Image (cartoon, rainbow over all chains, first blue to last red):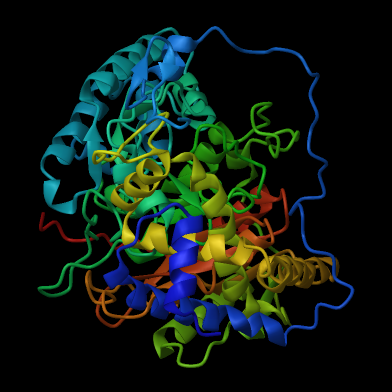
Length: 95
Length: 493
């Protein structure tokens, strides 16, 4: 499948990665190469095969729904690029 | 004792217990080697203060008679592992300045066992790469050199491979999502094992593709791999996919006796255009195992060809989801914003500045294959093919095969920069022999087995039954003893 610039732009937007317009043709070409490679999968007969959900036959563990951790505000905020008054700070979201 | 950094873990352990050497002496020897090896760019964050404190504590433990196998052993830690208070940035700009407030389970277990951390090791950004060239620190360099060119140590665990092969540390941690332990181990002539999925806790390791990622040791020989495996493995309540299974003493399982073992040779791994030397090494490996008493059996793994394309759907899909957390809010890099920029611009600029080209590419491919309208055609189809790949292995093991022998890589180490102009798929082909193992969740080990005509190391891979790393290590041990690989790179750095 060939990916056009519009699709490349849309994917970049969905991925929240800023891509300059000038870079879109090269990006679309790379996507096309990779997806062309992936398309071999269409040769495989997968009728009646369940998609794998877990590589080991284990059930995901469930734990009791209780608080096991907490009271670590300072540690949680320690690496934030911008933390104020005990919160993560971001540009204004709501007018 | 001289050349202390050249010791294996087992030799150092025995010398420490006999009092012939101290952990402080071992550590100082490694720190000196690291200081002189800047040209390899293997260690990217140095932690000499932590190392000296840990070594002093280890010496006290040894003196008190409380010395686990790794007590006083100086290790390098891949930058993907979160280490408390020490930069842990997955070789990415987006985690610049990040110092975790917590310690990964694997490093916690290693330190509890008395291991010494010398520093953090170079790697491909977010473990996405096969040549260590996607790193924000610049590439690590292979200590092996045959002409003017600098060679890749492989990837993603390229710094780990380079550091162990160059004797900057006794051993290192690696992680393996598609071959990132085994391919670099083969490129530098050391041993690397990817355990069964779920054997080693993933908690505190920066996630790439969660259903494929496993950490494992990269060591100078098979015995060291066994020792380190025992220390790294075990159930962890903090990782919901961690297996609740007892961890055997893997070292005690190394008898070298593989008489009667059935070793499968999958015909699908004989690729078109495979160099004769790889083919010859593979044949030599079969002879060595046969001479050691194993039975060589031709087998078929019919879906092998589809492993790489399935991987390049599943791994980017999981990566796009895992890497959504890097948004410039909670940790790491945040882009400088222009007047009027809102939160969406903050995300988009931060991620464009923070992620390198290969990571951006994979996140976007993952986003595409998971997007509405393509989820079934790509992602679900890939997961079905993955189920078939695993079934291939299940059937072979049901026939009584104990382990499978394959080449580790399709070539010896290549020159840094040589793949720059190739399309991304060319680089992905490096993982062609290793990626099946991640998709099937199996243990796989790369063992150095010979040199090519140019004098560069080549590795063989053994693939084992799930949870039977002990048996796999023993087969690898027999292969190691037969191949008697002792070549080391000549020091030029």
